[in-house]
Image (cartoon, helix red, strand yellow):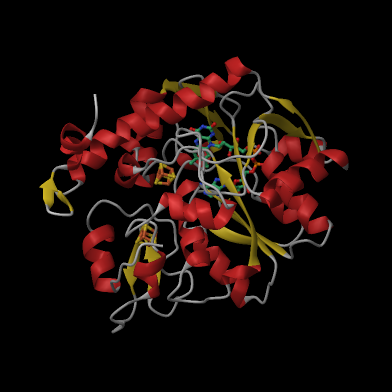
Length: 371
Ligand SMILES: Cc1cc2nc3c(=O)[nH]c(=O)nc-3n(C[C@H](O)[C@H](O)[C@H](O)COP(=O)(O)OP(=O)(O)OC[C@H]3O[C@@H](n4cnc5c(N)ncnc54)[C@H](O)[C@@H]3O)c2cc1C
Ligand code: SF4
Ligand code: SF4
């Protein structure tokens, strides 16, 4: 990893109060005495006097070296700029268990893989995201199929999921899987690869990433729902499909708005995110590219590839190769996010120094690029 140091005060200045905090829950996951989460941001509970703190070291928004992480995790670096490093074909798959399909967001692959791991004794806990009536997403330590089913489905607001890994460790679990958005996966990889702090992250055996374009800020989402004629407590399920944000109410109504109308609800930190495909996960799962009721699956590590293969062989999932035209849709969305947010990243970045040259990042190519 790149050598960088800071403490909780630096974290506040550089990330939390600088519009970069994605509320992933990594900073406080293993320092619960000092950091808690309130109103979708980390809050300091008690002053910490460390000169170099784990919170700063672990946060995916202080520093993150993508190619170093790829080399460390996968042994190689990417050849695909849009989707990251992966092994073999990109697949479309679905769970075979009807109970999973009924509860799941898309093909239920995430839940099916977790149930498979639990039932084979390969993990003793999975950190997932659960909500109550008001859709506030909280990390949840699942240890049996019923827990996995209760937490299935997408929550389009953010959840400090990595702090659930801290909960799982505190509860004594030794073989843990984490489901998370790309920012959670980045945070967890930083914890696993940290040279400065050892919190026992080798107990995290598998990271399942969800493809992600953005999450919504809860107060803004609540206002938007009122505009759409409903309220959060009346929502049964959310979905994003074919350019629309769709709300299914408990009363059986389907309310739709073009996804561009949700732009004002997007969390500020998502505007600086360049990872669509959960590029550092063992397995990434999303909906884009797959037909209704199926999931798009990208296997990246040996462990991820092996798990998906065994889950198919033992009948937990069925799968086929994603066609070239379907794959184009996945790549298009990844490119759209990267290109759109690159502009924001450039605007936010201060001039950088490379050897003796001090230059605005967007001008770098003008000085160093070829024809
Ligand atoms: C905020 C968000 C944005 C997404 N954006 C896209 C997108 O742009 N394109 C795309 O193709 N797919 C996107 N997805 C992924 C998609 O919605 C499904 O999660 C994915 O296809 C897996 O479906 P499944 O049926 O296999 O999952 P399920 O079997 O339903 O399991 C989903 C798992 O994810 C966990 N989870 C749900 N919400 C969160 C959350 N907020 N944080 C952490 N964990 C969570 C659940 O607890 C559950 O374990 C997004 C998901 C989320 C949560
Ligand atoms: S670790 Fe996550 S929650 Fe904590 S400051 Fe960084 S981005 Fe925010
Ligand atoms: S867009 Fe990026 S920062 Fe925002 S929730 Fe998704 S992965 Fe996290």
